[in-house]
Structures are given as C-alpha cells and as structure tokens.
Length: 209
Image (cartoon, rainbow, N blue to C red; front, side):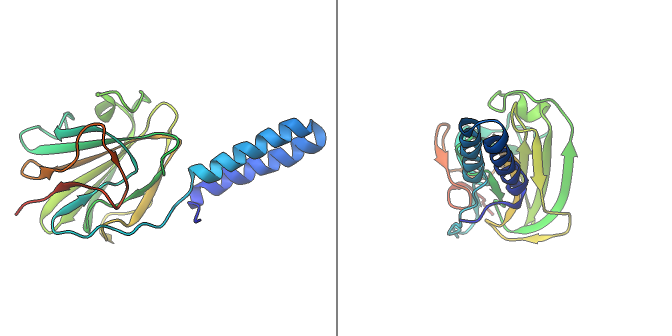
C-alpha cells in the first residue's frame, strides 16, 4: 500500500530508534519502538479509491465522523449564504486529504490560531487551519484543514491557479484533526451528524444550478 511521503521521516526515525534501542538499551524497548513504527505506517497509509462521479456531487475530503451537517457555524461563512459539513478524523482514520470537487483553485490561505480539541464547536473559528477555495463551474466550494490538540502540522500541496479533479489528493493531516467543507446555501446536504464518511467516495452534498 502507498504511504504518504509526509510519513516516511516519522517511520524512518522510529525504525532507527528501534534498532539503536535494541542494541544499546534492551530488546523490549526495541520491539516497542518497532510497534510504534508499524502504527506510523498504518497512520500514513494512502489507499487507492474509486472516486464517486455524480452530477453536482461534493465528496468527502477526508475519512471520519460527521460533526456538523447543515447551516454554517463558522463566523467567516454566514449562515444565510453557506452550509457546512464538519468531519472529525480519529487516529485510526486515513489522514490523506482529497479534493471535494473538480475546478480551479481560486485561493489558498493559511490562518494561525489555537490548538483546541478539533471536535469543539468553536475549533473551526479559533484553531489554526489552511483553507482552499475551489471555483467549481462558477460555484465556490471551500475546504479547511483544521488542526487539533495532537494534529499540529498541516500539509497542503495545492496552489492558487491549479486545476484539480474531484477526489484528487492534495494534502495530509498529521495525527488526527478535523476538516470542514463549505458549500452554497442552496446545496443539498446528504449526510447526517454521526455518519462515517470515506474520502473521495461519500457524497456529502449536492450542488444545485
């Protein structure tokens, strides 16, 4: 299985420490560190996905559990103009991020902030995040990579002006966190709070018009 490139330094470091510990400390410590390396391989896994194709479909940008599904709760996206799907990623979920729609990247913005638990309602406003705006045939769709208590590193590999495909890989969240998708108010939300979604596969909303 493919491993996201961001994971190899962690995996390599854990293996090197395991070998050193096995020689100079104890076999038990070495084995424990090898287990850690195995978990890191699992964490940074990047499975292939059969991308869902459907007219107007907005795909989940990450694996995880739906925290918000409906009217926007984020101040920067007024509730009369935007709807929101918030997804919480546990340490066991795949953390590679994928584009929710095809289009052209209109803006990529980094916002410094706090490191509150990602499941908190106000984390979308207060935490550090990277925000990507996509122009999908004249309709804006926005995806945010939001840090949490453990996930303090965001990798975003897209850039302004890039043409992207729905389901295309564009980044990774290191060690759990949250992703929010914002769609126009007229879109139809197709998931509910508590649902488990799969990146590039689950349709979380359908654009109209």
